[in-house]
Length: 394
Image (tube, rainbow, N blue to C red):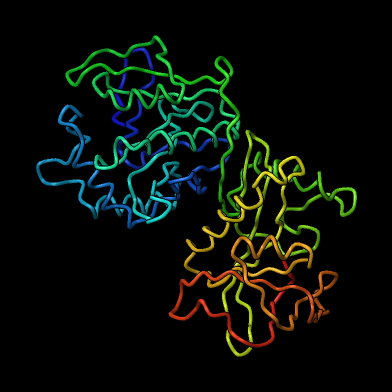
């Protein structure tokens, strides 16, 4: 998506096709710390290794794009230039996510939001740009819809996009996404006319969309935390009290949350915490899994399977994790086994949830693991021996 520059009488339009444009931080959640998942795509935070693909995007741009948005005569920006910029942005704020194939992991480009120029803390701009060889597959529309579902859930009522009049493909994508000409055309320049479009859900309601996000605990927005609290309190408040995100009912808190949202309501959740535990004579890094919950209205509709599948993908994507690990009640083991978990027989020891000075040893409760062979050959084999969780359970 190649967007335009500016119009007199308006704040300068941002260059959203310049990867990782600097932006002011919005008051809501951090999209750039979130992973969004669709049927075919994963949208995740950018990493330095993406620089090569972003460099190809620069090189592929239409000749009608202004020169400062294409490689100059000296070949800049180089792959190294872009890599350095990504590394710098990871220490600040970027709300452009890399778009990759959910099956192969191949990076196709980027999609996200920009909070500068017309895009502000309350009304961001949407940005997307994909390699030319994957055009005409609906990927841009699919990625952008995931971003829009996230922005709707975060409460953004109006989003903007500006597009060159000659960029027919991007204009069609924006039309599919519900963007309309704002009527505030920007002046025609030597590179063409820039059309300013807007999407205002209040004026033109869109169907409530389901979207899946994976986010680090520290990057949860206030609205995401509130949605999780509503989900857990609806199930457990009468019997266990209010949900505490940092000490959920005495269990260990999650480092990573995978959630299904329907609109702005969380309807399913799986959390996991990274921890090194002892199994026999070996130390194993696990994703200790807990907080598996589906809203009653969404049970028997596949939400549990879907959220677990996405959580398992997050475990596989995490190069620090060798196995998912969980304990559960006997009556729900069949669900976990259907979603790829394997039961193991072992004695488990963990810190008591009622006090750190006490330990609990159990030998009969179900223990299930999920192989994420990321660290070493043969890691898909769960080791033999008793288990020490080195902390409270999840």
